[in-house]
Amino acid sequence: MYVELAQWEAAREMETQQTTERSAPSKPVALAKPQATEKKRLTWNEQRELAGMEAAILVAETRVQSLQAVVSDPAVLADHVKSREAFAQLADAQHQVETLYARWSDLESKK
Image (cartoon, rainbow, N blue to C red; front, side, top):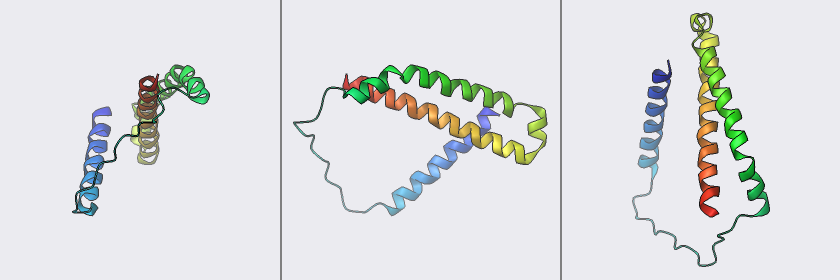
């Protein structure tokens, strides 16, 4: 089941990229120069966020695991409405985990 969801997400992402490429301007875009005064340290709020990041990721990964169990339930698979809803929730949960890992990486790089 997870493979099918991953394939669907990959196809959806590819379609979005193709649409973006078609609507992108044909002129080359100048790259922004990095600012010399760019912050290198974490703010107080970012430090608090980083301190709680592992717990947030653990909660999100636990939710993904529970939703994977729901998705693999034969009763849910037999009902297309429940199945579609369960897969949508699973995709959202997986996206949240990816977002949390990306944010964690950003905060760690600012340290």
